[in-house]
Length: 303
Ligand code: SAM
Image 1 (tube, rainbow, N blue to C red):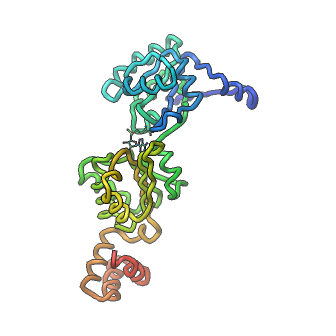
Image 2 (cartoon, rainbow, N blue to C red):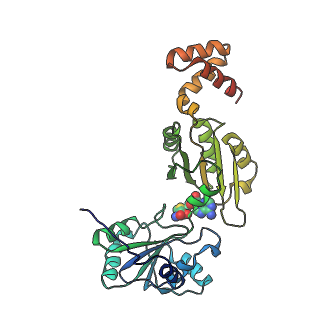
Image 3 (cartoon, rainbow, N blue to C red):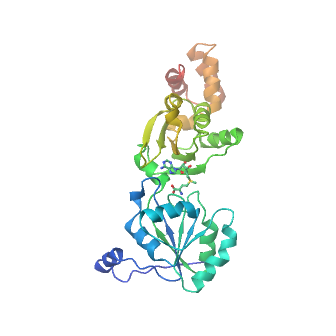
């Protein structure tokens, strides 16, 4: 079944500007509202007005959302909607939309559905033909991309990497030839392990950016070869505190060519043989250009 939801702005220009100045939520619409990721001043004016005026707000953790609402003097009717009860809430949400109520969905921080609950609800609304409308705003993902200084024209977002070391390493192995910037969330409990895995799987020279505590008091954005970033993060307990987004530079054309296994083989051979001999052996077994392998080896043999 093809589902098409169309929002029509009848006229452009002044009317749209007027709309943005005085927001009136519509009945039968579910608004997906982004909230601050640290700095409470980052709630948009439209988000504030929607939260003030909708009939009902579904929140990942109502205790958390109450604090935001209190800060803005808002008193919406709140109901919890989290990963454990999302499916049960579907009938409730659809029933209210059928009654013509206006609803908002918020998560604890940032944009709902970006590694936060809401996917099942949004899908159910689409299937039932209700309009789902975004109220965009903060997201740790986009905030980190905007300051990382790595190419952002193409990126791959992985959410959280698996907690189990072997599964996490496998994810990194799958990233090793990707040329787009790779982005993932990481918890403070695993940030060191994770950076060590990046060193082991992608090599210590791969550029990474660590975006920590964005928009908060101890915000820091650090970038460099991952081995240096690991040492920097290890060097102080403070560098391991808070919330993290890790961004890994895509493989350059050279890294994209030479798999990590072959990099290891080349480095291993070069530890026993002269560089030209080691290069010749790997070239014979991989069909890679000898000159390219030789230059790669000279660049990496001490790393
Ligand atoms: N939906 C949220 C968003 O759009 O930002 C992301 C939710 S996800 C469950 C939470 C993770 O996002 C954190 O564990 C952390 O990795 C990252 N994160 C959230 N806030 C952050 C911040 N202020 N600075 C850096 N990373 C942050």
